Length: 243
Image (cartoon, rainbow, N blue to C red; front, side, top):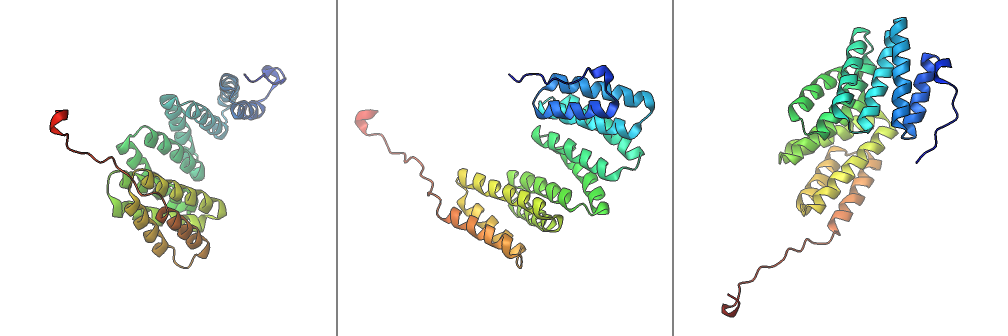
């Protein structure tokens, strides 16, 4: 159990300090303390009419509930935060909040909600040239398509996710390659070695000219080729004496 930090009395802190303290508590997994700090910060910002600050704290509260798998509470805070962001025309903040909401719907297998918000987020991300969010959105669409046995569609989404990640910078690309690796490993674990190889080849063709990505994908393909061949139990007919 983590010990409480020796912070000042909360009543002496302003809204910004309370929000930062809430972040610190949340990072330490001290959920109750974080919630109290965020709630106090939110009340102060609402009292002062600080709409942007209210948006920030509501998003932080949503993230706090999100980390505890309190889905309904998280979505409520995210929705309120998004509504404020939209009114203030804080488009990048609205996009980030939308992506947070999408992850919850994906986790809960709420396909219609996921697809609806993904369309809204993609339109906003395209307008902002938000390459990293676009990469994430296409990866999630790709996962959904592959899980639904729409293999060609899923591979096309994964290819687009990598292309957007290449535009989004090193961190975005590193994150997306990790997602690609995980998808390939899951296919292998499900004895879908052929599909795993096809996905590797599809992505190699889609990223031609990007040597770093190509080297990564070729190495992953080699792993798949040398993966243990799946062994299924052989059923035999029972002998007459066993019947």
